[in-house]
Image 1 (cartoon, rainbow, N blue to C red):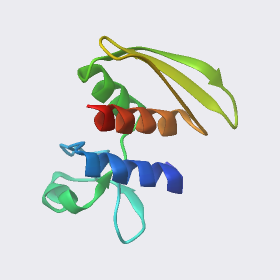
Image 2: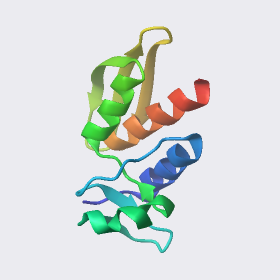
Image 3: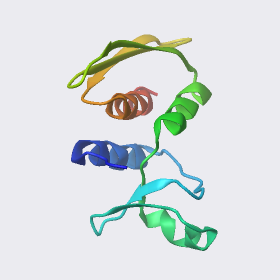
Length: 116
């Protein structure tokens, strides 16, 4: 699995904004040592608090749904540009643009936290 440096920066921002992580085997993370890896065993759980969770598509969708965001729709799904629109019951629609769907979802999570 590859994560861009911008996705890692957004994931760090999500952590600073309060996104919590209950680790599961198979979750991806970034360490301040500069590498990405995934959780292989439950024995790793106690050491993961210092690391940055790199949520995947399903993780992001779950977070957004549990925070009132629904009706995700791809407006553009190109090779170099992705544009996603998602709607919140009280805030209305939001659009995020980026180079990947994951980047867009990370941006939407950050924006949701910053506006709450």
